[in-house]
Length: 122
Figure 1 (cartoon, rainbow, N blue to C red):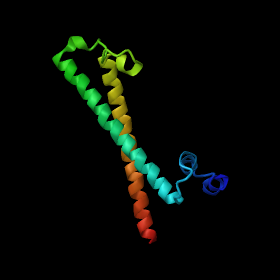
Figure 2: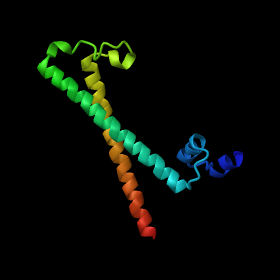
Figure 3: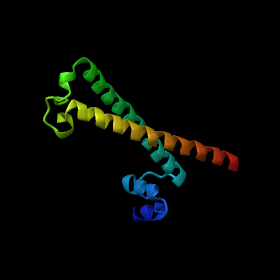
Figure 4: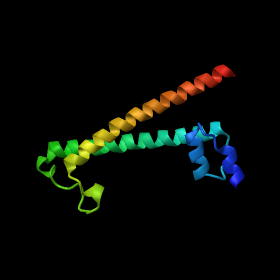
């Protein structure tokens, strides 16, 4: 088991080192590990973009239809992220959607660029 960690740990590949710690039994070469984590990051960024946009859209609809509800909590549940006001959740949702869209497009462009470079090498 220690040999697996020593074999897959490359000092310049932080994502590969993290994947070796998280998935020590995964026998993948560094290219496949990088593809796995970039795909997972793309899915996470796209999900955050969609849900952030939905939260922002919800707050806009509430602002137009019931402006007096903006100062009320989002839900009746007393847990931290859910007991924030509707207007603060709208601001946070917009911020999250903008950042996650940026990272989603950035990673998609990098993956496309890597794919084109690997095809040129073949």
